[in-house]
Length: 379
Picture 1 (spheres, rainbow, N blue to C red):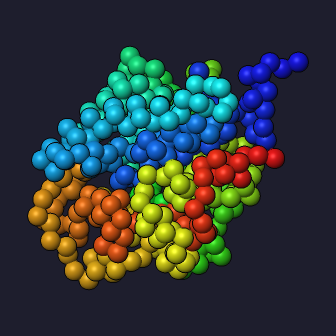
Picture 2 (picture 1 turned 90 degrees about the vertical axis):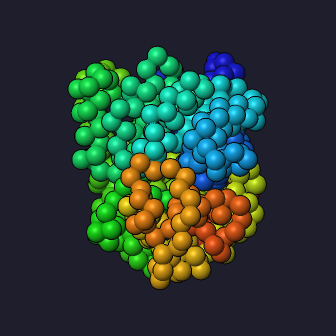
Picture 3 (picture 1 turned 135 degrees about the vertical axis):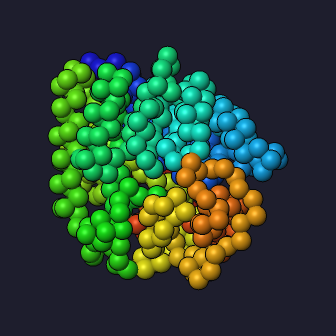
């Protein structure tokens, strides 16, 4: 007979194991900033047996001193949001230790401080993209924090694994493969997105799923080389376009160990976004979801609204720099991404940047995290 702990882990899919971390449901909630995935959403996902991820992107925006010293406010909020999320996740359904972590963009100014603070605060895992986190192993040294780079191609997977191997004599604890249907900043050129059919008014009809599935297999081959070298299991998680039970079945059928889901969790009661933000997803049609050029210099996916139409015509006046990105010149960018995302987090949705995944138009109602997890994972 299986003991109670084993029984609780039984389900449609195998538990996701990242070293000594184990979660019942192989679902990671994607990090979404500014202010979309904070302690409320992350804690609820961890409580429901997945991995809850808090975005550090201007995480301290609600602090009264944020404008005067955004970095201090952000570093403080990393600590407080993790504590709050752990409190929410205490009664985890599986009886296992809840797993919580952070998504930290490599493009963040003073990235090292954010990573070190997250590790010192006791984050179980740091997931990092919007650039290659070449020195991330150095920033978590001496902690138990697991680290996972986000990659979008076999080439980027090879580069980060080779660099960590040579410089730190280690492998990633996990790898997140983020595909062309993901939301927010994308690890693809505009040309790549067009090639995959992921930059059209009808992405569901034009997306070349089989083509990117092949890239996922190539990335897994790269990772397997380092599994052999370090004699360890490196779980691979697929992200981008995972919305329904059928989507999850498809991705898991590619041989990955888990999925990362962002958009579907936005329209949950527990999501930290205001109701007007969630309603923007529910109201969106597939032709409203477009590829935009972010001030970060990367393509991003967002909902077309009056703000996006305005900044395509004219530059927004920038009166204050929040020092959020390593490579950002206020004199050259069309708008301040911090202000645009904070307005979204405060519910000013007509005058904001509304990042979303390609499947946002499939959101039709407000549901709970538990309902989403059941739909994705139960028999």
